[in-house]
Image (spheres, rainbow, N blue to C red):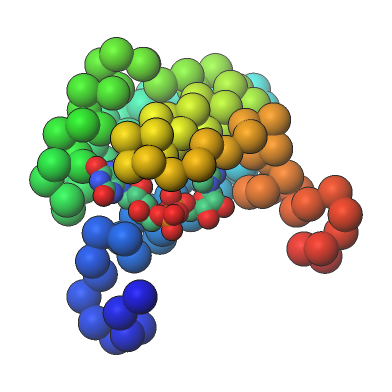
Length: 116
Ligand code: FAD
């Protein structure tokens, strides 16, 4: 990894962005209002246009078209995002994440207490 005070390369940008996105999904409402749903959908659409890695953004837009975002609840959004991240992992030849554990990873901490 590069130094902390240098411009982000696509690896660091990716790690930071996934952290923000999964944390947004972790703290999304269980029972969102129409405004919350619209805002989250708009946020992802705009991010897929402005994400500062051009070829990543292009695939992101295609993926959103093929696999529309699910903003109906915290659980559904977190699962949709986990599956989206796994499609990127798969494209990059990385291991897939077990999506049954997404709220442990990003919201509750591991059941063994190692994050407490
Ligand atoms: P990351 O993939 O950054 O993951 C960070 C942490 O998230 C992991 O340590 C793990 O704990 C957790 N995690 C992993 N998978 C999941 C999951 N499915 N659900 C929940 N949590 C998970 N890079 C490219 O080279 N080409 C691209 O086209 C590309 N497109 C991208 C598109 C987007 C929208 C984003 C945000 C990033 C993209 N990246 C792309 C960057 C790439 O996904 C990684 O962020 C980067 O390669 C660093 O990978 P990493 O292995 O350190 O962990």
